[in-house]
Image: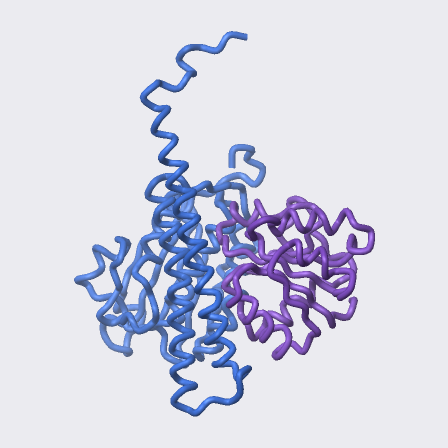
Length: 139
Length: 265
């Protein structure tokens, strides 16, 4: 398993970024980079070199899925695990979020005290979404 | 190939499809908009209660945990209301497939061992003499587990420490019955006839302090009926002789058996 030390995350909600900073930085002890948009993720990813990227699905301008596609097209970020966060909860809604190249999914509201630990399995060498597989859903 | 005119939707049916789709989209948006601030709220109180912002005075700790519990309750209510709307409007998509019931029950029981342990309740499956026989039913596995979760959590929450909750499987002709039995206070006979209606709490014995929103059993009934099954309840006296009248409740799920390879299942 790749060691998880650096997490870059993006959410357009300032309050959720605050929670994520505390949850992943203070509680989890990771080095974090907080982004407000998908565009900012694409700007920051090279300099920060994260071990994992956490993206809100619904973001204005560039959504989580659009950001993922851009990350996968760039050779330097093509293999970084990407996990979506979504406030959708029905299975049909969650299935819409599962696109090739995605590593995993976290459902909002998440547990802020365990989130850092909950991300660890997504850094496993072969953690990636396979169509038809539900084994990476973390509800 | 010519399409029969009878295959075409009637003109009056066409406009009806539009508001139904809009309702779903509207509800999904409302649920999303409710969950977004709830994520911040639950995140903040969860971090406080967990000590991420430093240790709290005892009174403040209890209040943070109270806020956390109620935030989680609100989160469940949002999910339940969304399900309720889709089930009542016949807009919920269920994917039925043949499933081996013993495995589903084993999974449900395993997933609830932690919460049972937290309440000091022994949760176990009662094996019958023919446990090795596979019993297949046509269910949507996720929605079936939602019903099982509702019954198991109810049973655990209404049990006292030291009580047991038993899950049993029985064949009944061409049907199979799953029973969840607790040793709690039982169901008020006055409530019993309306137990599976919406917003009915199975008080007085089964009090609302458990955090129930009065939708769980109603949703369970709608879901199990959509899977061709039935749900019933009984509060027997004779099963728990010596522990006082009215103690204990049994919920039964009754489903038709199918062939393991049934292509329509």
